Image 1 (tube, rainbow, N blue to C red):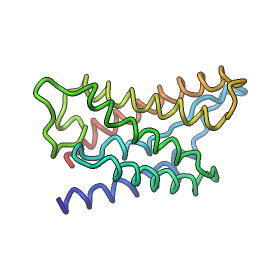
Image 2: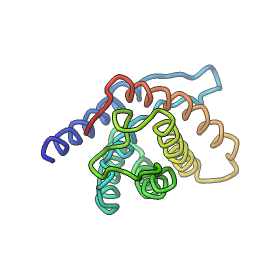
Image 3: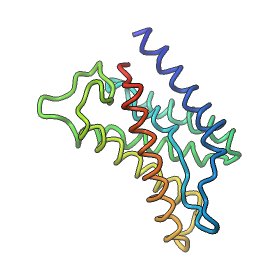
Image 4: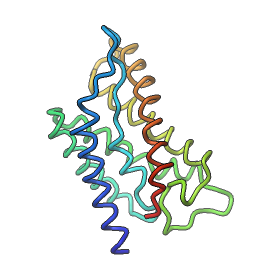
Length: 173
């Protein structure tokens, strides 16, 4: 248990540092086409243990989001998207529950689940995270196409990075 908590603390700060010091500075725009944003900090929420209570995941998601907001100078934007992702996590886990159920001591990673399950889980939560994030950022459906383009292109590039993390690190805890 102590080892799991320590690894999650490291993952929290590691993902925040990678997001704010490296990925924030990468500019993938092509002239006026600036719809690529690499955002992977929410991977912390995705990799929380299956047995964590919902209130704890919501609090951790808020702490993650507000910390990211401090680096991005976007008060509440990342926090709201992170809390929304944490709120949807339990229903998505229920939707994707395998035939034999879950071992409550596991985390949703390639170490414990097969690739199709991990891709489905990460893709659903990442897409909804981005849809919420860019909708709140625009704060108007006048920018509907910008929201959709940002969501789709950021999803594609970010899910590649998230799956690379899953393949390379293969977290156990």
